[in-house]
Image 1 (spheres, protein in one colour):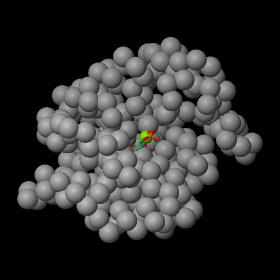
Image 2 (cartoon, helix red, strand yellow; image 1 turned 45 degrees about the vertical axis):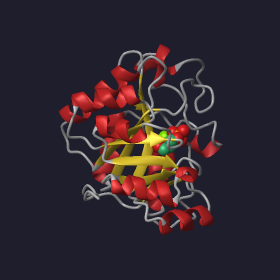
Image 3 (tube, protein in one colour; image 1 turned 180 degrees about the vertical axis):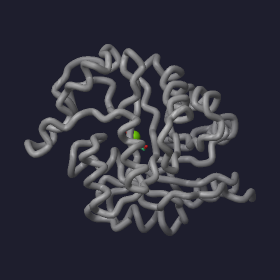
Length: 245
Ligand code: G3P
Ligand code: MG
């Protein structure tokens, strides 16, 4: 068994910035998670047409903003004016889509770690991985402890080329044949598996490969107890008001 990589991250991680009690992937959600004691956040990062890295889960704007259509079809100047909070509740009306830089600033200022999920629009994987990683490497003003993750192998490949030293993790819905070869090829330090994909066998297989193990999205007590008993390193949750980090 190889030694696991060093791990500067807390075990509990707020999902989509803590995006259930506040609008997902907004700074309001990060603030709320921080107020509940969370010191690490997962969030979804993608690019505008003109290459601004910003947070948004969906390819389209309808569900979590007052905009319409594909986010990738818009320049940042248009996206920056959208309301990304009113869909959630009136008190968050007017919340904006944050840029990657704003989120990095928040995490540096509040001493929090960050799991950036590369969430490229279809056909935009390479540009997303490359642009996000390059922006992080060139950034002035400090960085929080970072973990880049993605379901998208091409996005992780591009990130690895642009910033080989940034820690990477492969997101898996299930452990399909060839997962370990992919993780090795991408130089990942961790696997982030859908919570039900973690069994005693998969937990041992991943640890034996010298990799860290995280689960998403862990929202009930029985799931959490099971995963903690398996020895997982990170649990990503929506329920920041329920699980004490
Ligand atoms: O990064 C873990 C989790 O966020 C993946 O699923 O759809 O919530 O981005 P999703
Ligand atoms: Mg995500």
